[in-house]
Image (tube, one colour):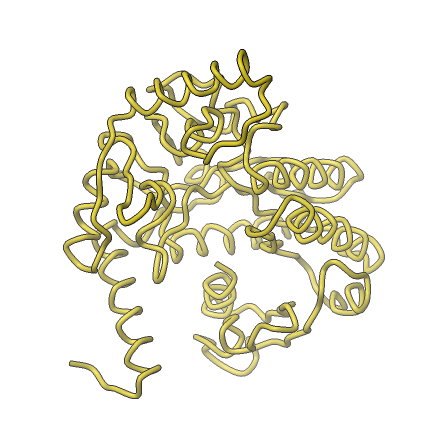
Length: 340
């Protein structure tokens, strides 16, 4: 996502300052990609957000910060350090540097899916999870991060929170909203549920548009929360079929949503009544996590279109085809081969 946002910002003529982890390469994070001229290439600072070192200095001359960084792997303490502590340090550095405009990237993971009925619309008014103890580490830390964004807004800063759905694209076509690996098979849950997808380039454009608008005097985006999903969202079955027609996918077994939900609910009841809730089970068998990934719901991007004047440029098929082409080019480059 970071690479796509930098490339889109440069395409639109913005001078970019990019902070990367010390282990990230300059090119991989997009600083050298897609820039129309040297004026927009910008600079790179290798920063560890878990430390204050160099953060405020890296913000010199910056008008608006787009905060994409989060830790998605590891235990709770690792993700808390990367997501929550990193955000605390960044917001402190913004205050020190006098930077007041923030485009804060959150996630659909913050919603309270257990309280949203099947078939209902998830929009910006939907409740967020206030008791996420049974959710995964990513959801729990992103909820804390969102509260930090709101506190920064309450302190008089210009903040817009964007919540993308599942971001798909090169190297992330077969993703967690389809199911999970179970032994030698991939277990898909449900088939007819609508997937809250946004193609990486479509999402990047929405984020850059938000950064342009939030920096304007008396911006009407300040304090807003906006969901980002594409148009004409596919069902899980349609999406999986289109992807499988283009790339190798694992052998799958599909379990209907009502069956999987009943199994997970039964396991939860047995765990609570007989085991005191102490037993640990894979996420597929934890209702709070199962509902967050597979519950059949509906989604809207009306607010993003109205407030950002945004419309997704790439259709589902165009996005999948572009992703497959990008993956093939990357493999050819790595192996030294050419186009077939």
